Length: 546
Image: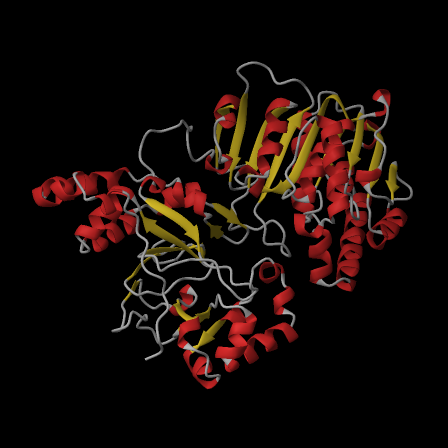
């Protein structure tokens, strides 16, 4: 039976946590990555830790980001008090640390109000054999440049790993803790699942495979968010600080709870080493490099336009006419996917999309002097933009002139970039067939046919519908295996991830079409010089307002 005193103390801790959280805004807590671990989850993690610790009678515990002490509270609930020889916690924010010191003053906890990343690791005899942590989820753009350089240098010094500047703060916590953990010690980290798929996570995965013995990764179902105040898909990563043995295997589990997952699989460490996406496990049995064609063999895939300020650079027809903006500086652009009732976009006589919501991208390559001389109304609009500080925004100030846009001609096929699983068909992403000359904002991925596919479409435009049908025939599971997922079931696809989607059926379709038409076969296999390097590159989408 759970100790009554500990139950009462945990209730006081929860009340204190709620009181302290209430004082801070959500934005402040997001900036510092302050999301407390729920009591039940903390107890499950410590119960699992008890199974992993070799000598449960001599626990030397550390939590590098202790907050008000959810893991320490769970430690005292799960482990006998007599087995906890020492306990240390670090908390950088006095707002949480000072009240927590009072809460735990009559226990073994040494709660230090300081930045763990600045603390000096203990000597060999003073290291810890149990490390449990929910590190701060601070994104890289909230880490100041000199601070990031300091952390990168410390990371290399601590565990010999070079980490990307795009890594979040939790990656540094994990690497720096290497110097605090005793040989053979057990570590359990509650971290975002994204490290398993993103480029900056390569360093973390290298650490887990090369520097320690990775035991188990449990990934929670992203539809079952572990933190009510943070939309992040979470995992618990377990390892021993020992050299990984030959032919090592790792337990990968998913869904349910840490103690009772919905599914699990044992995966060879060598398989993980060669796999770019770890979230495919345990659903996938393994991964090997395949010779099967992928979408990148048929399409150049790019993200849509990042304008610098959609509210300024994307203008409705009504506003463009009211401001007398010149048609030469306006390109039709698609609205957000939620304003597309159909997945096939038709066009009017000049190529504009036939949509109720008609929008135009402001894109001009003339100098300000020429704009002022030739287009006074446009010059006045640019002056307004400078007064509003738009010219000094990051994207704009790295362009010359600041109001010009990157080249993104209309693409015949598009895929939505973000989405949740549709209850009707379970598909989080939509493929869109675009007949218009509208470009697209960065909520879309743009697929430009290339090579033989581009040549085939040049010769037989009616193939567009068959290609579109193929894209829509790609299973949701296949798409999700290549993409990534966040808390609340929000799925995302980057261009390189969409590029890796298998496309063997498209190769078969193309071969069937080509070999069924001997004249098309001849034209494609013996093309005239301009077609030999054909790629779908329609003319720039500058069209007058009819």
